[in-house]
Length: 287
Length: 160
Image (cartoon, rainbow over the protein chains, first blue to last red):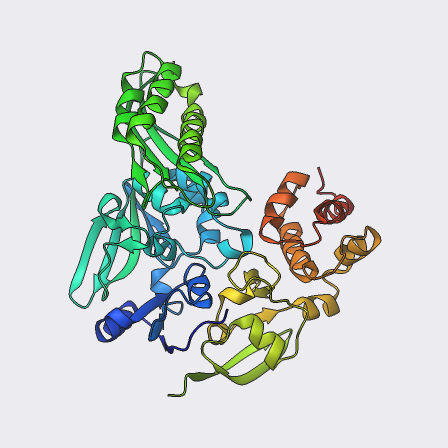
């Protein structure tokens, strides 16, 4: 259980990292916090010829906000996101979910960009990015582009990133004060990957849910938006009825994966229960 | 091809320069090259917490960081923190409550508990359990470990 041999390169700037990716592309992996990649290397599930270490690139870390957007650099550590007053003020869902991301020692080193690029379908941050309609800012020697979360996650450990592209930041639209959120997950041990989890948001108008975004994770090959559940929540007679109706849509819409952690039936049950809990977290705001 | 690199880092207050294979992880470097065997190697994929060390003031998984990535860093291990006396209260409480049995998890537990205590203004048993969730005790002696951490919290006036 030791990492295989590789060539190790240290990038000092985004431009240098992109140049390295352009040169070594397919056979290279970016290492940021390494909290997803190092286990993969230690277990020999990947055998990259080259590791490109982006930790020295100071410009990739940090949290900034303007009137409408919070921008989190891809190399920002979980711990710094957890402790950020900007995140607490503008991105309550991220602040609420962050303590569920692995364990303290892993949050001290792991990065937001690393988690998103790794695209574990049971990870919290991809689901939160989808729920918050975040955009991934991507760079390569060919130029920069932006990809919305719903187009970024393509499957288990698969994203829209091309082999020569680097995820450099994530942009979150700041939700207005009328938006509320909820988060719930089930895992066998606190900090482990979720067996099932959910991140939800709702826009409240006159004490009713006017618009909702419901994301489940750990149930398929990527975080999944449940649009019929969103509609059911909006048209519900009251919030409690809306929750029940939203839960009921899962029976038809959700065909969860089965594995040695939980059967599909268990996951469906957990998804219903957790969705109910997450949506009840803003009960006080609705009639 | 020689996949090695020269690194210079501070380990427990001492500046050290070594040539390391780039695929070596930090905890193996500490244990094998520097004979600092107080940090243990358990699962080697970040699950068990036995390899916990402190890098630039924060606890990290020694198995999920390459030694070459510690170039320029300040690394502290159980040996350094213990000698410096940072962990004395915790160690005494662990000892008096038998909060270690085989001892394999103890260095990681002490570093994690020390980080929690140093960051907290009030602590409940739940907080301690949550913070130590990333450290496995194979003897399952969690109750005494939480007792020991709460005893130190009480002494510091932050236990609830």
